[in-house]
Image (cartoon, rainbow, N blue to C red; front, side, top):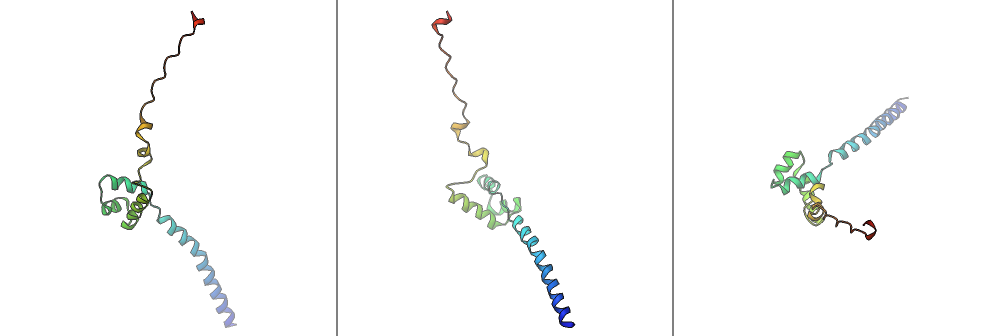
Length: 105
């Protein structure tokens, strides 16, 4: 009878631990979401890694990881507004006036 109690108790503990595992894994995954565009905006604005990490509540290693990612992508990651080229932001040239047709006279 005691062996059955031990086996059932051990099974119950294993089930509780197994039920808690996915919740802790999901929580850990959501903690590590870093917005690298915000990080790079701060870095490009002249802030240090330490200042950026403190302001955005990220670790310094997360800030450095964003810098490394930006460098690998060929430059500083910018916010979507800053990514538009100056040519795309320039006003479009005015369309020429339509030529008058001889039938209109």
